[in-house]
Image 1 (cartoon, rainbow, N blue to C red):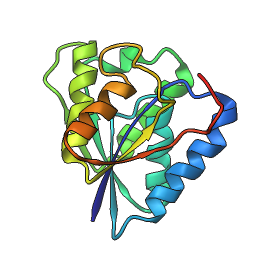
Image 2: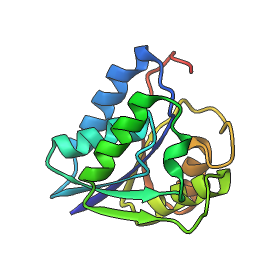
Image 3: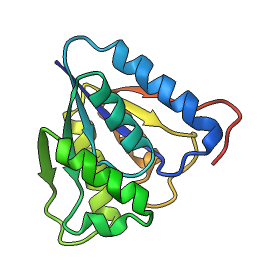
Image 4: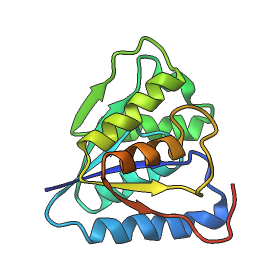
Length: 158
């Protein structure tokens, strides 16, 4: 069994999505044994990753940052996808935060890294746009000597 975590941008330009999907698939295909996907099921990278894991017969371990997490989804389509993927998760862990906050998102990212054998980062290489952003989680993963696969097409910016 291989535990693969994901961190990544919620808003991915349309031009980047085929590259991101292919990169996620490439990493998942190289895993040995069954795959457990570690994800917070956020819009964007997390949901693309979760669908790819399930599509390959893997299971999901959802790490929900806080109570009231659903309120952070501003797009109805993303919220519907969250609910569907949440219902398909084999394991759900909700962190002890009463409401959404950057600290809760940071801790959820840290938890993904702590449990992962490998982390996929759907990351443009830019600084985080708030505490707990993708760059923060990549830096944390590096500080923990986790293997990281960065997936982002060259020349595409957010």
